[in-house]
Amino acid sequence: MCGIVGVISNAPVNQLLYDALLLLQHRGQDAAGIVTMQGHKCYMHKARGMVRDVFRTRNMRGLPGVVGLGHVRYPTAGNADSEEEAQPFYVNAPFGIVLVHNGNLINAQALRQELIAVDRRHINTESDSEVLINVLARELEVAARDRPLTPDAVFDAVGALHKRVRGAYAAIALIAGHGLLAFRDPFGIRPLCFGESDGAAGRELMVASESVALEGTGHKLLRDVAPGEAIFVDLGGRVLARQCAAHPTSNPCMFEYVYLARPDSVMDGISVYQARLNLGETLAQRVISTMPPSAIDVVIPIPESSRPSAMQLAQRIGKPYREGFVKNRYVGRTFIMPGQGLRKKSVRQKLNAIAAEFKGRNVLLVDDSIVRGTTSKEIVQMAREAGAHKVYMASAAPPVRFPNVYGIDMPTKGELIAHDRTAEEIRQFIGADALVYQDVGAMKKVVAALNPKLDGFEASCFDGHYVTGAISDAEFDAMAMGRTAGADDDEDEPPRRAARRAAEKV
Image (tube, rainbow, N blue to C red; front, side, top):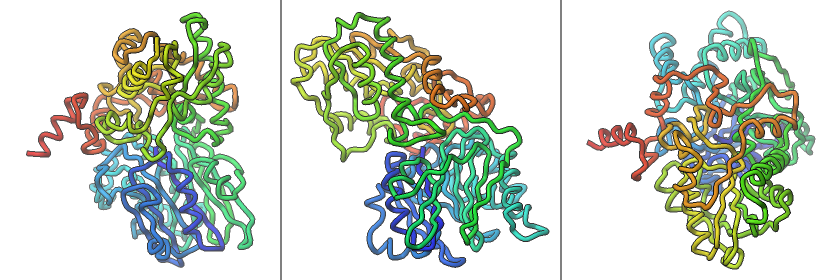
């Protein structure tokens, strides 16, 4: 899960890209980067840290040009400690290409070997995004070998890329001297949309991960980039689009609606906020079938993504909705922190209980999801310490039982509390008096009702079905081994990675 943005304008774009990245900061807090182009020359600044910390006045002054890209990083592959793996990535041949990428490539290791041995291209990092830009560069080279780099040649290159790459990818690239290219994987797993504005400098086009980046910078959302589609904007602002995949289907990531996206975004025709309200409605039905509403005194959300679901649930069961936790907004989202140890240590820095809302009450805590269980355990304990009589937990998402291989930090089964555990065993682990989960079928049904044109959802972490095809054990192992170095540092660390890190220290 990363955030990407691309702009082509008639005015300098550095400030616009910065503003858009602030609106996408929730999608990645590890690193940030901006690249602009003036003529055929690229100007880039990227570093580890939050957007506001990475870019200072001197950095912004060094980013001239009316075309540019931006990226906020949430690492799921490669080395989180390496500034070299912050994006954008650049290759100088052919033409000069810069790319930002959101997603995860399943066959990155095989592609890396193929690029080196067959295509004679150099790969300098462990990032799958560097693999993706080199595949694109190779296919552009082939497509333009006997002809100029026309839009048709660009679309042919993206079509060839689709045939080679497996996984989830939404990407935006700048081709020096030619224009801006945006494309999305044939299953539409990771989000990408585009829009425009008419300002004093004329028409301006923006492509971004979420509609909130467009609307928050004064652009009108036109539509989503379709699965398998490529959009090319030349330097004159002419927009061309072509479907580049043979058999595209629309299967957006369900976890975007559950947790990742901002509630004010619209993705693939679905309001994220409305999706979460609908999840609260079906979760209420599950709660009613599990326990009498009379056993509950108050419904309390765990900030922030669960609020719409909790409000709808409370209304449905006829119980008061209360804010029982205050969030410290200067501590990052614990789910996207790269280490389990960091997540555990930050929970009490991040949340503080309002004792008056808990004392002597039977409270139903509502969370968007329960992934590793560590955070839920700490929060249940905080509720008890605040004086709660009974602490019930409800998850707006079903049990997360399977690894996610498409760009979310759930790559190994051993890290998931629900893998090979019953709901009762999970309840005992987190220390709740009752635990209620969302139903997988109901979840898909109520979100799909908001856009019947979708073919389905990528919900592999809930149902174990991988829309790009079955994942072999070898591919799971490769992705787990290629995952962020030093991601975990506590007793819950998977043995495979622990052994690898021990070997690296020797």
